[in-house]
Image (cartoon, rainbow, N blue to C red):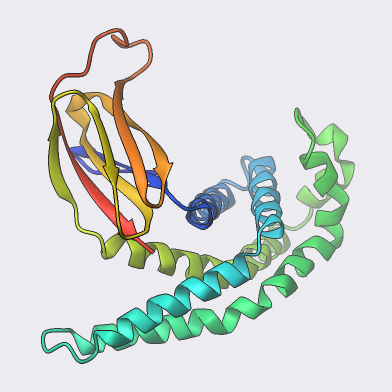
Length: 254
């Protein structure tokens, strides 16, 4: 996903498959939250987000991956407890937060079963998996449900979304720790291209580009080697060569 501030766009690129999954889940949780807020206007967007998120969680063993990553993160944090300049209160709060997340991870299969076995969701899920769904005429049971009491609808939506909250919290915690532990450094390229190797396995790249530069990074690679090439927006002078490029990069470890 891309983050922005007043002057920059931050692009993120996963260098490990599990991190790609975490970023996809993060985006899925954001989509679910936004579509929930617009439920009365666009209920189909909410159900599409709900089913997409559920499908992604069913395809990957997120419980095992997250548990391993959070455990490793916790051990690294504990090593900092004896450092004289560390904020021990903040450090212990983070360690406790990891403990809390770890307790909920074994419940992920139960959460997925609850979503999968819900009578209404089960009756409409197959239709939402097909491209081109365009109207309630294909889902009369959903049309009937949408004309029931709005408070009951809200309670059902809250229940479905809340089922994912522990997973969302664990994913967000892992990504936040990963992002915060990697500082940005400034680089200048004369050709718009860079290639780099790393002895330390990397999990993700974060690249901060000034908005006014009107260029974006094309990134490829894996955890110990990557390339970055900057390109202009397609159709906006795409034939011009990229000369000097100044940007910031953060190399995020596991």
